Amino acid sequence: MGGGEIKVRLVPEGVEKVVEAGRPLKAGELLRILGMNEEVAVVLRDGKPLLPEDLVSPGESVEVVRVLSGG
Image (tube, rainbow, N blue to C red; front, side):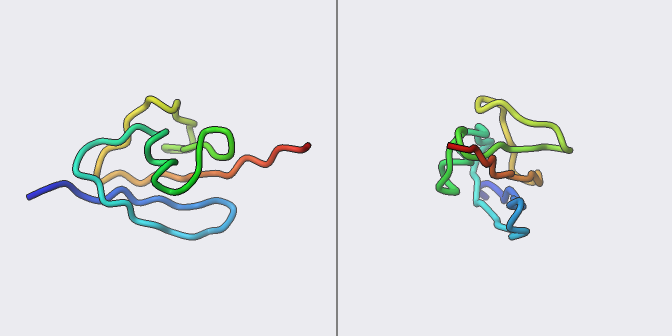
């Protein structure tokens, strides 16, 4: 049996997505799978930001918050 799901809630969109993961993913990898990167979004677990190298395991739920930057 291979892997599981990581549940992702996108903020501010309020959309829930499920990412199939056969292994723990780095937060940065998760963002890339979702079409983002560390410059435009941050992954939160229990309200705390994760570093790009922090692992998110199948079965976990996280939030991805888009960071708005002025130009």
